[in-house]
Length: 284
Image 1 (cartoon, one colour):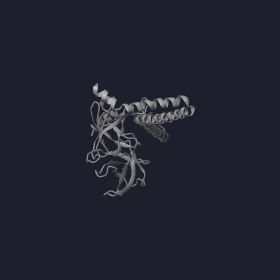
Image 2 (cartoon, rainbow, N blue to C red):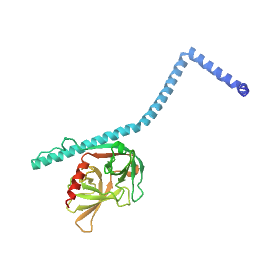
Image 3 (cartoon, rainbow, N blue to C red):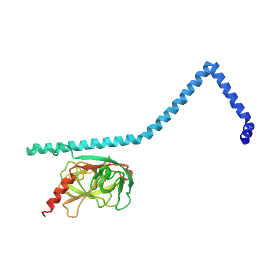
């Protein structure tokens, strides 16, 4: 207490100065309309700046939620597009074969998706892996396809209750059936282990017509990915050793070095398809 009193005594002239300033400003504000208006306007300007900064900070903090909503909506639109493409292909088949059939027994599109955040990622190793924060309790299972807002990412390999490990395109273990957009002929896409931006599409028949810049999409010849999901674009090509096939260099649509969010694709007919194919192989 003594130290506080000593401090107040030593600084008494400053406290007296502040008190007199407050009294002076109060008198000026009360007795002069012009100064009162100036002070009021200045206060409004300061308040406006503070409100503007506060609004900017709040908007910035809300960007994460807005971005997630946009990603979810983008995923829904992508599924709707794939569903429309599926229906269009069936309508073309109906016209050609004079046969009518539905997508499945319920007439519903058999795909949906689960949003997930990337919590671990590697792009510099020969065998790269990605970890996401959704697992078995979120409905994720092994052998589910994974995509980003740009294109194919990979396939779910291992699942725990709350996390999943994905084998991405940047892993030689992952082979993906792809085709040139607009063509029915397919080849196998794999990573050469060198550049994280490129992969190779091999075993594409020589008579397939394509050009540099053409889009490469999933073929749909598996129980993992629907047909028509973007994989990348053709940047170069050459003949393979047997001269009957092309090998295409494909620039991947997904930028794995900037991957933050993914969508895990659920195929409700995947188990049925795999069981049917397994039964057929028993007869070999």
